[in-house]
Image (cartoon, rainbow, N blue to C red; front, side, top):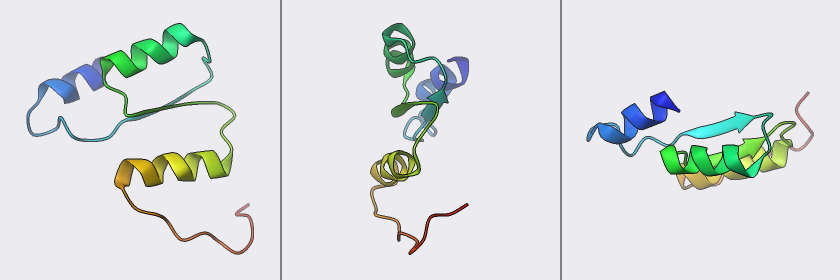
Length: 71
C-alpha cells in the first residue's frame, strides 16, 4: 500500500496505473487497495483472459490474442 500512496502523492507519477494481484480475496483488502490508489484489483489464481482484460483496460488498448493458449 505504501508504494501506491507514494505514487499518488507525486504529481509526475500520479497517473501510473497500479494493478494489485493478491491471494487476499476479502472485501477489506480490495477496498483498502482501491482507497490507496490501485487502478485494478485481481485475486489469485488469475485467469489469463481476466489479466489481459485488466491490462487492456489500464493501458487503453486491446492486445492481440494468441491463436493458441500460451503455456
